[in-house]
Amino acid sequence: MESKEIVICYAKRTAIGSFGGSLLPVRASKLLSLMIKDSVESTGIDPAVISDIKSGCCNESSDEMNVARVASIMAGIPNEVPAMTINRVCTSAMEAVRAGMVDILAGHDDIVLAGGVESMSNIPYFLPSARFGARLGDKGMVCGITEGLYAGSKIIAPQDSYIMGMTAEYIAEKYGITRQMQDEAALRSQNSAENSTNNGRFKDEIVPVEVKTRKKTYVFEKDEHFRPGQSMEALQKLRPAFKKDGTVTAGNASGINDGAALTLLTTAAKAQELGLTPLAKIKTIAKIGNDPRLMGMGPIYSTPLALKQANMELKDIDLIECNEAFAAQFCAVAQELNFDIDITNVNGSGIGLGHPVGCTGARIIVTLIHEMKKRNLSYGLATLCGGGGLSLATIIENI
Image 1 (cartoon, rainbow, N blue to C red):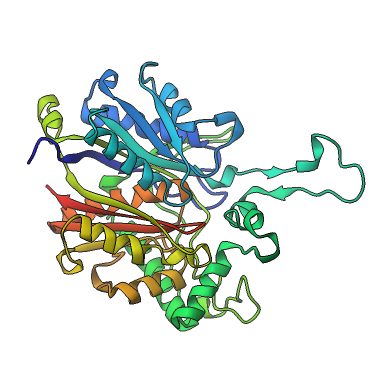
Image 2 (cartoon, rainbow, N blue to C red):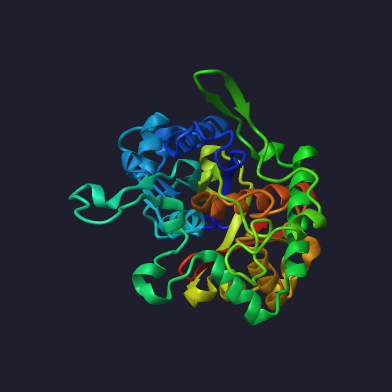
């Protein structure tokens, strides 16, 4: 390996919690601090040699401002090690990895912890009128989750705003993705996630989380979002969620979830110097924007760009992780890029496993690396879309 090649020497995640589920009592800063601690303990690295900590997070709580820094201090990392939080919506955690890679390539950093965290269960309601008085009329609470799912469209064009579920409806209509196609993709994701969880497929990549409440203490170490025994019959009974005659339902959309994922990035030379074992090499990470109304189609632009940067073709890719924001979006992307479904999302994705938005970009990299190891494969692609029309794509080489 060349000395300036960027390698990943640690890649793990928490299990993904369901909305209001097992991780509800755990704040985002705590989740991320557990991952930071584990990365130090697992690699044996001196925390003082860490150059920076970068974490994606889309919905920071005001009392955890710069959650990466809060988590870093909670984890006992020296004060001299800086930390930053990145919000590039659903692509935030992959952007954290990309930013870490770029800083190392530029010679500014040697070792970067990069990943993401999200506790969607703890996103609050807001009362915007409370600060300066409601004056006249009814003034209700605003749901932070729902507002976030408009991804700024209410501000950009209030008269033509749309929630993210409607972007999936736009895609389904434009690309001819039927309800049947969406439900079939959703069923595959749910069943794959359940099978992989029950068979211990994720065990090597998951860091157990000890959760303490007033009543009990328990260890959370298995993904819980999927519905056991999900069937096509059950999916087909669900009503459209965003449009009266639509095709997008709660069953063929991704979840609202909690979780964290983290990687350790460095150069091949520094890894050798410190006695770290590289798991994989980053070939490239590409970023691009696209039409916000069709935000889910971002991977059809970022994937070809990444392949071009790596001087590769899609046929060179052995395994694919393409996050499922919505089944309509995933089906359209797979259709347009001509993905081999047999090597794509083999353990489930956003629909079956869940989509803790600020974490997912790193989560799919982590899962990709571990699955490539299990299958002894050479090259993998991880890609995802983001609200507002954003996409990143990462190409990984197994070591």
